[in-house]
Length: 110
Image (tube, rainbow, N blue to C red; front, side, top):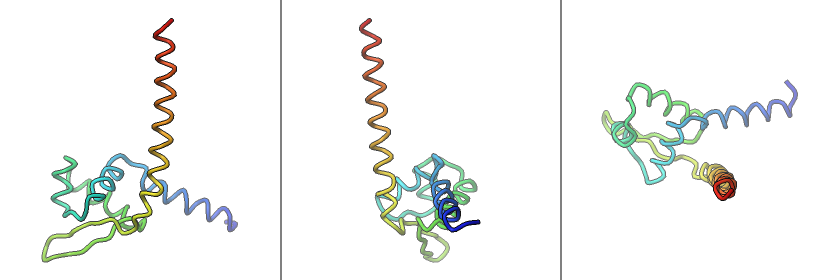
């Protein structure tokens, strides 16, 4: 694999790690601060077994950090720069939805 191809693969793998509604919800939840697995389960209403897989993927991507206190594992955002990635995406989607709304408004007038 050529150097440039490898860079694209690394970028794609990173984007895949956040390209899941539950993982995005976890990131948004942890924006408020550290949480235990149980707290995340309760906040998001997901199964603990499935959540563990998502947390592992985010941790492997370098987005989450963990700390253990007795038997409880706490998760937090390791690299706050993830929000520099997510903010422009939210802005782009907001613009797209506004454009769609404008089209719908025009259709409604005819």
